Length: 83
Image 1 (spheres, helix red, strand yellow):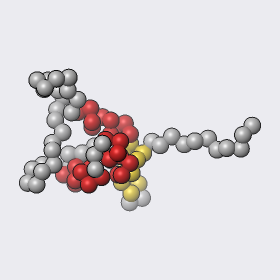
Image 2 (image 1 turned 120 degrees about the vertical axis):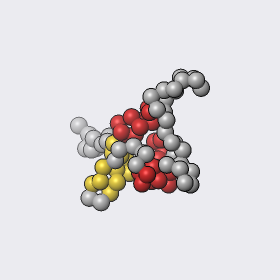
Image 3 (image 1 turned 135 degrees about the vertical axis):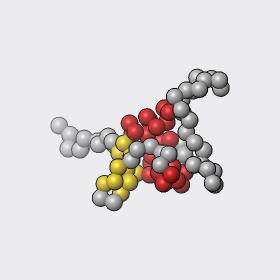
């Protein structure tokens, strides 16, 4: 038997790791959180964490099969004065 501990699979990601998962900057993800347009998140002891399933579900909102596909919805771009 090995004395090595079993690796832990991350279920929650902090903002920098969640941003990498979504190919966004951490600042963009933080703005989406402030505007209420981003993925669902949890507050654990004052820390913001994201469940991987919630990140994937949010990204799926913008899934399209073609440029004419209306899809499920749109993920709003973040621009000054727009939400």
